[in-house]
Length: 120
Image 1 (cartoon, one colour):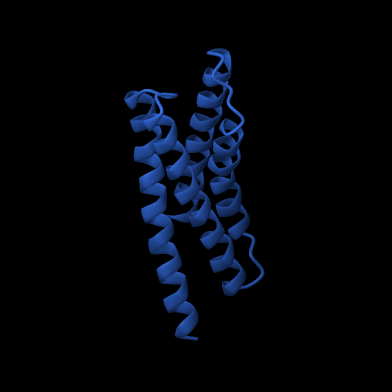
Image 2: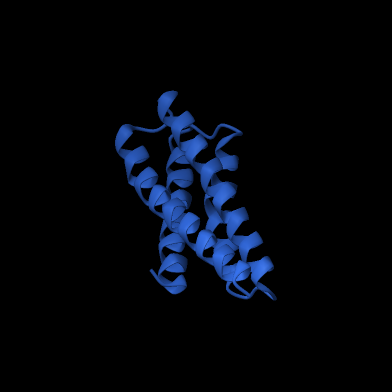
């Protein structure tokens, strides 16, 4: 998958996170921790986008690792919200599946970048 496709996938995911946030707010389920989900879920794509303008391979890897950490945090919030019935299983699945895909792609990208960096 190209970096442009990863950017697009992470942007679509962020839109889904924003829509979930708006839906939960409209349903009067605006718990303070919902902001955490919004921040971590939208940060993934921002860091991936920023990585494409990295000044070095090490900077690229760092930005992608930050995106990966945000992805893991987002997984946590989604699971917590599902477990506490703040969101439905359907809402969870609609965001967990793309989040997992993004996470796997980030892991592969970081691994490839590290191997490339070590071969220089």
